[in-house]
Image (cartoon, rainbow, N blue to C red; front, side, top):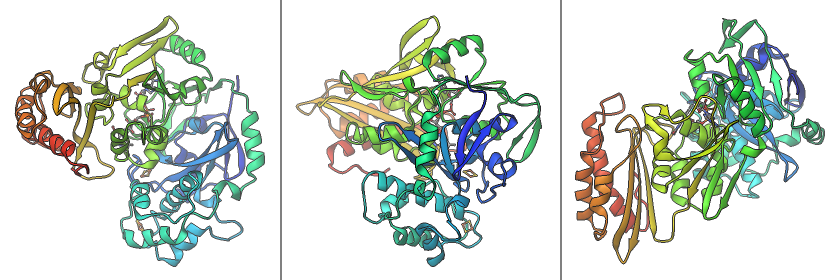
Length: 500
Ligand SMILES: Cc1cc2nc3c(=O)[nH]c(=O)nc-3n(C[C@H](O)[C@H](O)[C@H](O)COP(=O)(O)OP(=O)(O)OC[C@H]3O[C@@H](n4cnc5c(N)ncnc54)[C@H](O)[C@@H]3O)c2cc1C
Ligand code: FES
Ligand code: FES
């Protein structure tokens, strides 16, 4: 058992034992590490603006290298950095020599007040890193940048100059890891045994984005095996399970949670499963959204398409499917797909494992069929078959980086232009995501026509109970759900998906 965290920060080894282990990464960088690194900014403290973007390099054991990805440091915790290499904006310029991205930001006038600039520089580096890993040597396309920078806000420069900088910088600059002694960092991180880590920060002061909070220090446990995880969960059933912390980090910064025990799932290799087994997609609890995004690109393109609108790259690099399912928001973007695809959750405890069909998992608003000592281990989802047509929808007030007003999933099995079976689910219209059995029954056996879908949309209105909130009125949601049936018909009938 290790009693401290080990990670590298801009090439320097950090061994963290005390209260620092429980801090957000931005608090650690800006107020606690030596020297203080204030280049990483905090503006929103909830993952929305990207001012706090840093790169985190994690071991890819198969390729024996570190893979760098951006995260929002304001909603990440120091205990999540174990066995990684963190690069902040201060780590980029070598002896005053700017990187290509930094030089391009200067040349193209990509910065006015400069508050967002470190975040944009890190995000552009993250994008170049991804292109390099994929073996692409061409310049960043505007589409790459539009998606890759969707988690970064600039309030004064305007985006044209920042996009110019991205075009100028290109992707031929090599990995940021090469700015450091990559070999010895890799060797050191690789030899840190996969043993559990237990950090007891003791009493003292923690900080929440600068504000001191006394005596709020949780015990932190990083299991290395599923057995460790389940044993600790059995001992401490009130511990807070942490996957990517993209939900929990926001709640922490809003003062809504003060965990006394932290149990981190991220380092458990057995939960890092992402595979197709017996025509089913199996996703373990430690797998991030960005890995799922790449994996389903060709296997379930419609799921991939909806994931490009899930948060931002920073959020997808950290957040997980299991965290999304366990958070149990009725507007969680992933749940409707998993309802119609018929996913099953595998949950486990020291007493054994059980499989739960996803629709039985949600008992009410944020109420789960999960015992205090149980942990979700994986989700198994049958791949859509050749005859099944899948359409997924996320309706939000803004295209990128917005919370859904309504979500919907349609899985129609079609033979000879007739609907043999229909599964439809929608979110944002009640306390949980719901299936629409009456609308499904009205579709079954009917030809796939606009009239059939329009009639089913009218029936669906009676199966939902939307409320009015800041994102839309109940009437608007009723109308959206009705209209989505017609839209689904047109999308399935045309070759190109129609943007909502
Ligand atoms: C800026 C921003 C944008 C976002 N955009 C979207 C979006 O577009 N669509 C969307 O649906 N969501 C969005 N989210 C919400 C969030 O990113 C997702 O819900 C994400 O999938 C959560 O995963 P996580 O690993 O970060 O969960 P965490 O924050 O680590 O955990 C979430 C919950 O799951 C529990 N949990 C974690 N692991 C387990 C386990 N193995 N067993 C049981 N319980 C567990 C935790 O205790 C916690 O209650 C956004 C969040 C932010 C900050
Ligand atoms: S400060 Fe806005 S995303 Fe972190
Ligand atoms: S330069 Fe001021 S916020 Fe971007």
